[in-house]
Amino acid sequence: MAPSLTLSLALIMPNLAPTPVTTVKMALDYSARIKQALGKDEVDLLMTLYLHPDVTPETVREAKKAGVAAVKSYPAGVTTNSSAGVVDYDAFHEVFKTMEEVDLILCLHGECPSHAGSDITTLNAESKFLPTLKALHAKYPKLRIILEHCTTAEAVEAVKACGPNVSGTITCHHLFITIDDVVGDALNFCKPVAKLPADRKALLNAVAHSNGKFFLGTDSAPHPITSKTGPSKAAAGVFTQPYAVHYLLAALDDAVARGELRDEEITQEGLEGFVSGYGRKFYGTEDVRKERVRLTRGGAVVDQMFEGAGIQV
Image (cartoon, rainbow, N blue to C red; front, side):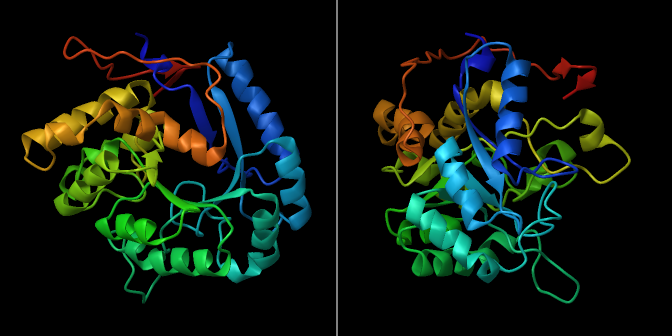
């Protein structure tokens, strides 16, 4: 089985540099470039817009008609290419009302930015954001919201406490690593950063007992190796896509070995739902390919480096 074929649906992030994807034309042009680079139709693309003052209610209506899947919110400065992100969510009231009206999903990078004099750090930025999630859900109850790449037990409980229009995604790497794996290893640095062992345990339990509330979102970020290990600050992001399903199952195996999950809690139905079914259902995307992945224990060789267009990842 070729690693690249383990996933057939991708939510395409809009945080391009130097200009984020803020119009429908930009999203469609970006989709065309990705398809051309792939060379064959093996991945379904869900395109997104970057929440920005340029995005208006009219943009939202146009996006829905064009098949754009979601609008992605980045609080200003919290992660890669987020300098043009959100400062004040109240400024987007009419946009959110229109998103409710036409049923366009809001994806949230759930962290508060830190600044001089604040008590917000990379370790508590997600927890500090959760009141914003709750406030948005209360103010726009019909708006479908995804809290992306949850990393804390608090985030898991916050998503569970919200109504059926709110779901959360969990990455493969946050099921593996904790903050100790990030310190001193730029390859494990991402935003939000991995947290404590207790948080990882909560994420693993959320996977095993998702019941449709949580689903896989790899947040895979193929940064050039020079951006991760060069002299400048490391880029935030972990590249997992070629082996995403492998990592997920290995993380669950490790959890069983540590006594954090029982074998019987990990079912084929639950895994299929978390990896594919629950996310497709939330996005309203039919599985027309009907492709399945078969994995066997042992024998897999994980490539340490990928290269394309003269760039090593």
